[in-house]
Image (cartoon, rainbow, N blue to C red; front, side):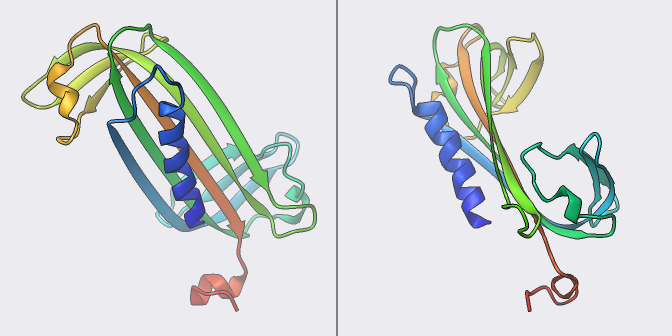
Length: 192
C-alpha cells in the first residue's frame, strides 16, 4: 500500500506540471491514515457500503460497478483501509477558473480477496480573491464560485508576488485502498 502514497504524490506532481505552459508545483502537502474498518452494512442493489472506523464514526461509499467480489462480503467483515490525500499548488498569472477530474479504479480479480483502490484526481484553476501577507493566507474562488482559504507554506517563495486576480492551480489527489483481512490479522496485527 505504500505504492499508493507514492503514486498519489507522483500523480499530483505530474498532473500539475505536465503541460509545458504550466509551472512546476511550488508545494506539495500529503496526509495519510491507515486503520482497520468494519463493514456495517451493504446494499447490493445500490452498491452502497457503510463502514465503521476505530473511533466509531461511519462512512458510506458506492462500490464501483467493476468490483467483482461484492457477493463475498458481509456485515462484520474487516478491511485494512488506507486513505491518502495530496495537494500540489502552482502559482501563475493569467487564466480563468476551471476544473477537471479523473478517476482510476483497480480492483481484486473475480474470486480474489475483496478489495482494491480508487485514485481520484481533480485539477482546479482558481482566482485569488484576497491575500493576507502577515498570516500567509490566500482566498481563492474556483469555477463554481466557491471560495476557499489556503495557508501558503513558508517555503513557497512566490507568495510575495501573489495578488488579487492572479490564478493558482491546485491538483488534489485522493487515494483510498481497501483489503479484506482475516480475523488473525485483526487480533495479531500480522498475517498468518
